[in-house]
Amino acid sequence: MGLLEHINKIFDHRIRLGIMSILVVNDHADFNRLKELLGATDGNLSSHAKSLENAKYIRVEKSFIKRRPNTRYYATPLGKKEFKKHIDALEKLIRN
Image (tube, rainbow, N blue to C red; front, side, top):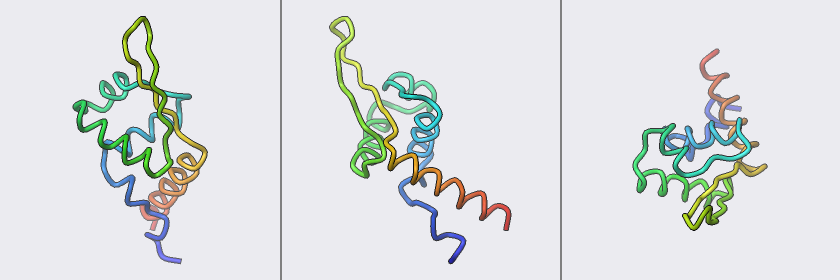
């Protein structure tokens, strides 16, 4: 088993890594909160969130709060599992 076997390429980008880091430790986060925490543009955040959604690592819920659109993101059980494997693999790589 190689050291890089569980490194997940989808988490290679800092925005996707950041989205997952935030969602794994919080129940959810909305678009504006993620944008603020990650220092991302609307388009950049949207495209990276879409990549994670397509991989089934996050779930997206769209709603309205006082007639304003609100997008919330949640880590899925698969996303949490794959992210943990990725972090564990990075830690092993660093230790070796």
